[in-house]
Image (tube, rainbow, N blue to C red):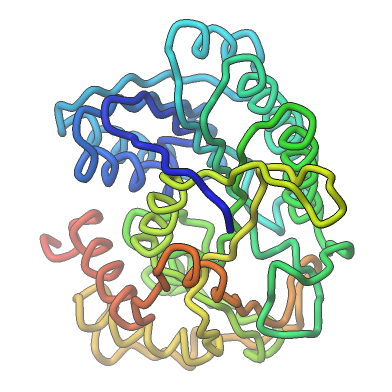
Length: 355
């Protein structure tokens, strides 16, 4: 891939979804690694899940004492977004703001249209009118739908989404391509695969399973446990984002003499799908180790194997070869190591050891 370097030192970076799981970790990493950087954060702080976790993430960022400015607003609010771009000379945009969740898109579709489509359109328009050097945005492994070929490659067709959430993410990729071609906006889409880690989203399986087990409730394992997921630790996701941010696609000529837009898509996944039953076993072991659950906890009595749920797919599996070739990076955190950090965070955050 032909790219040019984007030096982040002394620049202003906009991170949308900054109070979110990936966004907050990205902001902290940027302040740690990049000298003299200013980061502007946007987040609407919706109550899709516990807002206390979001405020705790923001608190950790503010405690760093760095050049940080936060706006509680939605990217769907075009006037507010335009004001932010007008008041700040933003060089790089990382759009992580979105309504997440495959299953929730079935019951609350309006939220996905507003944030994932209208909001993303507003981001593109702002980048168009304010000469942004690089737009990096979150896509999703869900765009692969029920593709049978694995591992999933960015060269595969993704024309059969099985959820509205997946359809909005595919739409983002198409919209970004159009703006790259029409207005020469360098853009890179990142298809994230099942992100997990400490201070994550409580609706994700590893977090929701932990909550239910703590409460003595039954956990449901879909497709009778025959699903596989390419679990990717949040630090690996952030490492990939930071590397991509600093290398923007460059406009070039094609073999037919027509220009190729400055546009690229990558998978960021662990390239190692895990069976859900194995995942649950590792999670249980690490929760016991961290003192979140008692050693004699009766897991079998709290586990139910159920059919596949609408909108889900049986396997996710990332081909990360282009990421490795272009950036020399491949996610490598093992599931056990990542869940161990999560379990230790969970015990500390909910003060289980104090009880």
